[in-house]
Amino acid sequence: MASPEALVSALADPERLMLFARICTSPDGLPVAGDRHTAKLAKRLVSAGMVTVDGDRYRAVPQAFRDSLAKPPSDPLEALFSRGRLTTIPRPGKLRQALLEKLAEQFEPGRVYTEPEVRAKLAAIYEDHAALRRYLVDAGLLQRSNDGRAYGRPAEARPNPENDGRRAHV
Image (cartoon, helix red, strand yellow):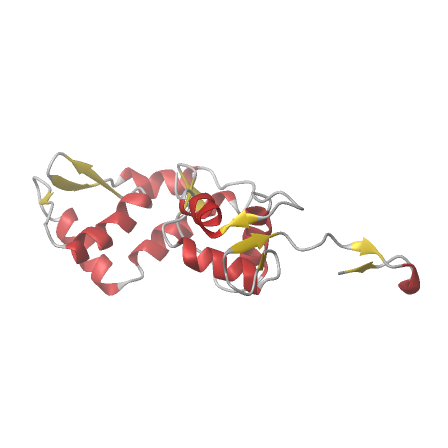
């Protein structure tokens, strides 16, 4: 079940909105087009749960809107996921930071990961794995080697006795 925010986000792009309108107004469903651009637009609508692919046709799922309002998620991070996959990356702020911290937990502290391992972990969560990786590195939750081939969690924060027990990053 996608959150109301995820549904609105999926429809925020004018081209996706127009495609969704065409799907909704096609009584027998809209034929799946062969062009990659339309397929990419439709993929986001499918991942949000508002469209399904039924054979060779896209069909609207109107109950997705009702379902999204049925029970608000207790955890705001849950609203960002549908069927175990991230549907949208929130704008910079507290919610994005919380999401990135949750994603960083996928990586064991002290272990070095290759770029393909990081890609595989993040691609299983979201199609734009490169953006997630970049955000994790920019937020300081993953460190990247100078050559970009190795990644790992930064050293865990340890108490610093010189500042009254507050946490200091090493």
